[in-house]
Image 1 (cartoon, rainbow, N blue to C red):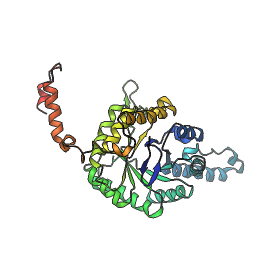
Image 2 (spheres, rainbow, N blue to C red):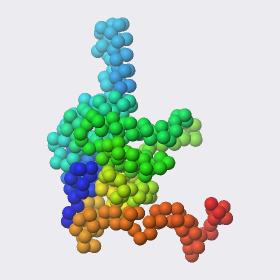
Image 3 (cartoon, rainbow, N blue to C red):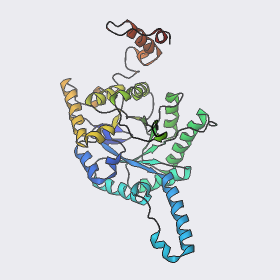
Image 4 (spheres, helix red, strand yellow):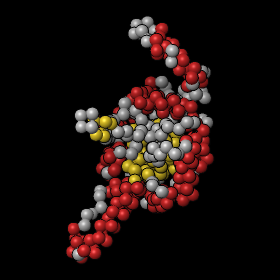
Length: 344
């Protein structure tokens, strides 16, 4: 069974990719993911903003301490763990790239154009096979327009593209007014792949303590519908690879994304919940699914149910929205739909 796939010019032995998480930040876990059948791994993001803030804080304390007493230097705080340290992150890139036989994709979240380009170059020099730009940005500034936000992304991609030769993937959020057109612009700016979609971690409110509660909730398979739709719309219409992420837990989830047109399928939550070995379950499950249908490679199914290839392209458009609402109302055995819902 041939499960190999091409992702932004990288030849992968399987379409299953372990995306950025605590599991991909340590070499033993990376080796376990490789042994379980991962086609590639994405390292945790290097957050340049945190590094630079920590450096400024540390320098300020050093100056103040030196001015008060030379002995104070021995009491100065050490920098935080490797996530906040560029040199340790680069060591991880070098180590993983030398020990693993599968592509190692680094992940970067910059703060300024200079940090994006400088760290991207250092990551390339450290041996990463590719770089994923994790442009985690929430437009809370009400003065920014949608086009301002898009231009910010395009400027970052263009600047990084000018500095590195390795493939670049852009991890997108779904919060754009015209994701399809924006995807074309990102590819034109130099993106070799798009990752659909970035799952922003949103705050919760603790009503008992009247405070903001930041907690991590793992994804569920039901969350894959939005990226699945855009995967199907973009397949075959953009000059860039497509990576699916969010909601990947079962073999059926993997197959759905491939049928929609994904080149690779990334996963995090299921691996955090079940461990690296769960990846082998999905790889074997995909091979069994293909074998049961006498299909021996992924090209037979990739994009089979994309918008471009199905008989009813409108199933991915508004016509299907209307059909679903009408179908729900008339389906036997369903509870009656309230009048307010019927007239939405």
